[in-house]
Length: 336
Image (cartoon, rainbow, N blue to C red; front, side, top):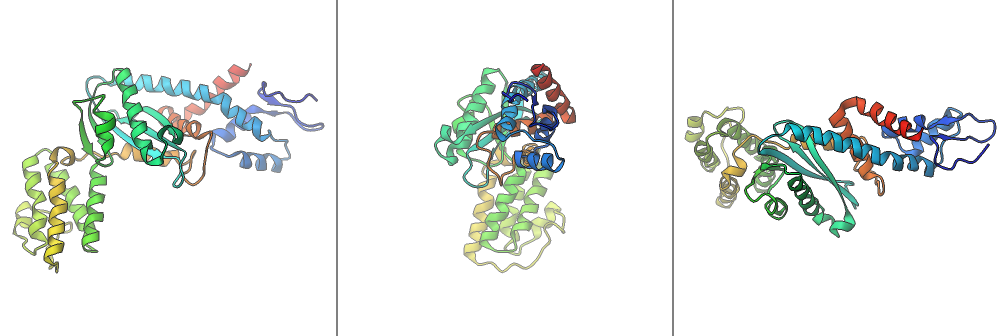
């Protein structure tokens, strides 16, 4: 038997062992299995496994193929986006602690499809806190270069990312903060003031956004209701006809300092109606990041292969289950 030199889709086994095709390793990679799991299964099946360097060499050879089909898919989706677009941007770190990588993903809000993804390494940003800004800057510069017109950017929270990354490329774009994230922020702030009131405040905010998202004047009036509600004055609650299960009258015992802090929370949100009076969410990005965890969990490091695994998740999002056959056929054809 000759020693495998890494250029063939087959690995030559030791004497008296069977020839193991690269297609077997591909099936493990596409199923998001690590080399350790692949090795254990092959040994249990009494078959000689690839070596670890050869396993990662297959990943290296697959990378340009995956990137090609990813770019092709994005081009097809962007060709369907005409006029000025509403887009969702969100950023996800590689690991819950000491992340070396992060991914910024852009979705078209109306098409409900991804249109761009970019990965950023820690060495580019120099610190994990700067990774999102560095990534967003590159993302929106790239979108500007391909002449994608953007009128609205929906984000999970109001940060300096919009001013530093989006406005230089799209000076006329507007920022929208995800309704769900804003409601959760209100809940957290109210809970700090008085435990047990946050859930009701969160539901109330989402309710008035759903009812008055096309009427800023009414929305602003509804945002002043908590001021009297927490003071046990419920006349305006009944006038607005808020559902009693979501905003039921009850007797609150709050001191003046707590009431003043609650007023400040709702006033700060009401001061930015164009960002907060709507029902838009970043749920498309959040859903993808949950899917991404199958290939690149936040509880395991992928120092060299993180972009590859995330791109596999994106291929699954764009092409559906057929992406496996497409990439596998392209790889085996290349090796012929």
